[in-house]
Image (cartoon, helix red, strand yellow):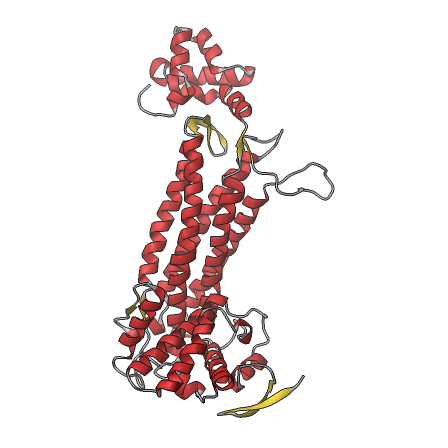
Length: 458
């Protein structure tokens, strides 16, 4: 491989000839051959956005030559738009401040300014002006979390909730057997069952929105440890103005840089809401799997869309692959949240030293959950078909229907009727006709399935 020689404060080092990065990035590549997992794309894009807004702020404050600032603006904007991603190969498991990733951006921008615009923009003196990795990287995590949360995760949640609401309305009068402890219980409608899923998602959505608001306070301007040394007193305000103009959001200068740089409690809280969403989606996925189980030996209340063969040896078998995929994502996110929690408590004095790990898991979990919400809506919720005859047959023999007679005949006689109906595989109505003084018309009215889903005194 052809190489060129680059130099930094530690001396010279060989860098691949065509690479746009410099010496510090190359050292990180050699030092951290750990996982092969680069930082998430949204992390890199927001890193470009930060360099863009920093250059604009430095230009506004006349701290940098305008021609150099303009050149940095051009290249950093390209990174923000998703270009040059292959120039950011540094492993997640790197220095805990992610200084390597920050310098990766500084060097790539510096190199491209020289190559494309024939200007000299020093990685540290110009591209990194008024910044430190220690305030830049926590800001990247916060901004990326808010951007992906607002523009990707919340819309995906809305998409799934609307799909569930549509099916709930469509099936609002279709009665089925309710279940507690996986055992037959009182009746409810499919609409009522799905409304519970929708309400779960609504609760999670509210929690995520609140967590997003906490992430809008930024430590930009705190530089190395939170005191703001080497940053203009007005740098943060100019930076935030540019950032909000670019994103159409409402980020703010943090009230206390020491908190926002040394602790990642707000991101830990956000990760907790992602775990809450994972628990919600796991519940929905498992309900779908149980309802779909069969087609002969299970509940077989619904049929999920047939998407692919389910077995390499059993012809005709079709499995609930979308809920299974969803459940695996949820398990991953729940486990990842523990990693974020452990990383979040790794703030020592003025800096958290597991920032890359926090960024990786939170941003990747958002991506996984967003994709899963859309997949679950489009390939499971929208397309499942109710097995009406199976649902009605199971419902008719449900001995728990006798609960509706409690106020008329009492709990003890109701238990006798339920037991006999179950043992003899007869309907509650037929047994109740023999055991009570109620007429058939009275029993039909009291035991009407849809009527029972409305609650109240019977």
